[in-house]
Amino acid sequence: EALGSQSEHTTTKKGQQNLETKFRLYTDTTESSCQIFVNQLETLEKCGFNASLPLVMIVHGWSVDGILESWIWKMAAALKSQHKRMNVIIADWLVLAHQHYPIAVRNTRYVGQEIAQFLEWLEESIQFSRSNAHLIGYSLGAHVSGFAGSFINGTKKIGRITGLDPAGPLFEGMSPTDRLSPDDANFVDAIHTFTKQHMGLSVGIKQPVAHFDFYPNGGTFQPGCHILHVYNHIAQYGITGITQTVKCAHERSVHLFIDSLLHEDKQSTAYWCNDINTFNKGLCLSCRKNRCNTLGYNIREERLPKSRRLFLKTRAHMPFKVYHYQFKIHIINEIQGKPIDPAFTMSLAGTKEDAKNLPIPLVEGINGNKTYSFLITLDTDIGDLIMIKFKWEGTPVWENIWDTFQTIIPWTKGTRRPGLIVKAIRVKAGETQQRKTFCPQNIDNIHLHPSQEKTFVRCEDRFQKQNRK
Image (cartoon, rainbow, N blue to C red; front, side, top):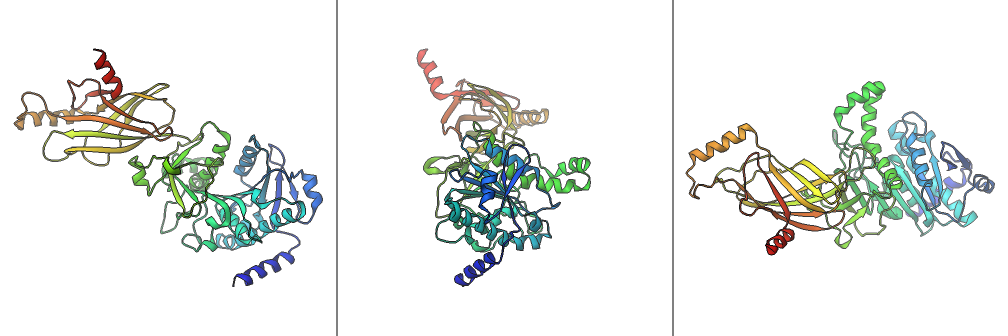
């Protein structure tokens, strides 16, 4: 079976003088390129291909209009802007991609074969090692890249494949040989940005297909691409605005990767986690034993026996990086009976900046004596956290309820108004891995009531002040 498919592949190659795929070497920062033809060595020289430099090949996806999309040129320019010099080639398979989707899907294997043939020719003619090749495939192009990796002759593999929101329909749930998989290169990474399902299908593939699979914002949808924005897009683009909304979340994978090239000082960290709900509780911000990694071009390459799913939050626009914090708050509810569901906010003071009035995303009511864990993200680097102001956002309604509680329930604890006691706030910063515990600044008045705010300082700072007294 395997031999049969291999010989069929060889026959296809020999009968193919003119490849359908055009290999365009990107030449400068404008939208221009120089075409390299397989078996025509002089085109390598004419276009300026440098065999001593690595090769990055950009592989586009399904085409609606038959033209190369603008992101391709942006990515090529971003790659060329790196300190590390490289050859950048655009694999233009528009002729085969500008078809009805099922036909374009069928063509992905064929294009994969042509890319494999191109890399084999480079190896045979100018001794360019396939391990120095990095294929970056978007949507259908991710699977094309996977097929190139599985079709290439010999035991050595392509160096790296990056799948940018690999296409879902007709690939989801397929065997590893029928889609992008970790076996297709020495290292495979994937970014999933539009796995939101509609009638059982999603535009991007949901299942892991790489050594490291990144799911920004859970992978289902992306900030700034909300379905409500479809109306803005329709106003701007006419009825094709619906396509723009789909494109926004799907193509976000591309812009996250470009972002990693353009903003070296703002690399996004992602964290290994079972699912988005656990991540949203802040329970996965660990970098121990390589549990975190960098999204995009500068990823730490590590072959794993099993795909690893990593999660992160991002902003709605470039640079996409946010700073992740886990907050664990120990609260005692002195009101016996039903849990209460108050709205809290926090203001954070850091050594570089402050962040004010952040809503606290508690998913359950406050009951008894318990620690609550949640994730907070900040768009800016506030430096080291030095103080937290924790506020119960009371409304007049809340205060009336609270006053009623005071009168109808006979409190046994003297004249003190019962309330919530916030004992301690423990914070872990994902990006720095620092942990800090914050205690109430005023230990004589630790009860919190509606509309009140309490200040928390680092526990060691408070103890030092007490000792000085």
